[in-house]
Amino acid sequence: MPLKGKNGRPIRFRKPRSKGPTLKFWDKPVIKKKKINWWAIALAIGSVVLIGYGVSMGYGPMVIGTGTSYSETSAAPLASPEDTLYANFGICDGGKRQNCVVDGDTFWFAGEKYRVLDINTPEISNPQCDRELALGRAATQRFRQLINDGPFSLESGPEETDRYGRKLRRVMRGGQSLGDILVAQGLAETWQGHRSGWC
Image 1 (cartoon, rainbow, N blue to C red):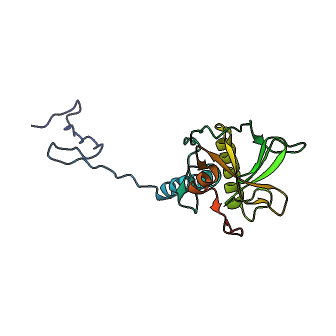
Image 2: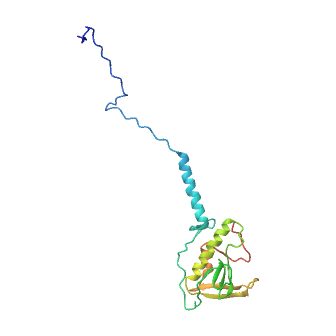
Image 3: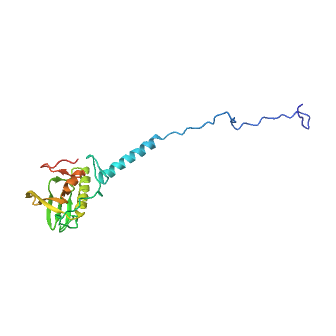
């Protein structure tokens, strides 16, 4: 029997408005999949590649294009009793040059200019491209580190001087050529009688 109000009319009950579907225990919840932002991923990967390339060109452990790794912290050969020469070499700048490194294959020692025999390194004074400049700077720093690592000796070759008046010598330590170390590390080439391109 329906309920009646004060005026004697039946009271009508309205169904409550639904606030959405009611999940039963047997219903699976609907999970929205997030869209993958492929542009952001591509940008991140591209940035890492470009940064890695830029670092490697100037200072990184891999010299681009040579396929040869080098480490500035690798141990130099130990001195032998024949190695009696020593100086504290800096990088040559203006003014009087006594003991300094010009580039990877040229240095001043005791006020005289020397050219390292049997190798050629990239130019830093007149490079043909950015790659040659980066390699030349790396070769200069590495040669300076090697020659400062301890006593050394200078070994003559068939010719005393080159056409520029520089003394031609192999820089040796413990019976090993420091120039050969630069070649092995991709920072120099064995001298072939002419300069090769580094670009």
